[in-house]
Image (cartoon, rainbow, N blue to C red; front, side):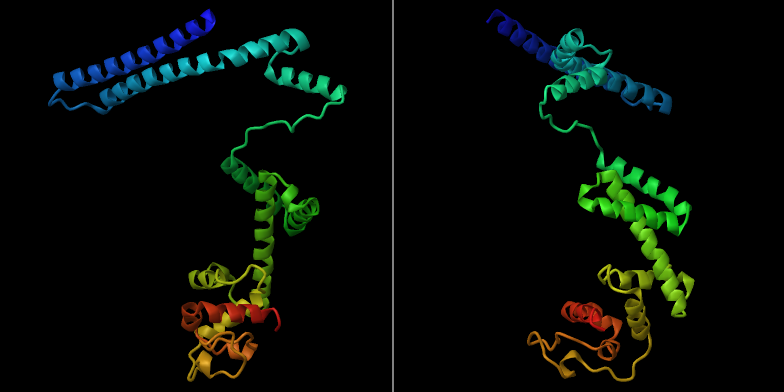
Length: 271
């Protein structure tokens, strides 16, 4: 009971000290502002003042952090004395070993992971394979695919996605060149925006042909309602369009009518 009172008193004193420090800091800042009213600080003076205030705040935070970590440090010291280890990593390894030899089931080792860092690392890993060429890229992508996407960690998923994107880009470029398209078409702003509207599994050939046909001037274009076929609603949009029918629509008509666009995209898989 006495120990609990002492701990409570220490926490209360710490809070009072923090409040006092903040009050003193605010008073110092106000005093400085009054004394230096009308004075312009140089960049060096301003940086020095800012750093001084920041240092005091960091020092207070570190002190509070050290107090919170004291109980964990005590646990670490106890384990060191009983199971051995020079640092917390060795202590954890020895502790796991003892329980595993005893046949206990342990949770997976906890590791701190930053998703953004892992995403960047995965992309960097992909660059190494991409530099080695398409064969190396496909080989690594296939290896990861055999493991299963859900079984990959965040870094491996980032790597796999980057490899697949590169493989698709290379194959799309080759396909477009066969169709007589310019090598720069994949970087063309209009084409890139047009391609985004389609499912990633839509063949680049179908996208390219729709894009080029929509770019050409059309003398007469039938409206969706004038085409003969089964409609899935009263707006005249059919369930299925042949390639010839789909190519008669302008880009503007596709963009302004989501249902029509979806129907044509679904029809592509049957061409």
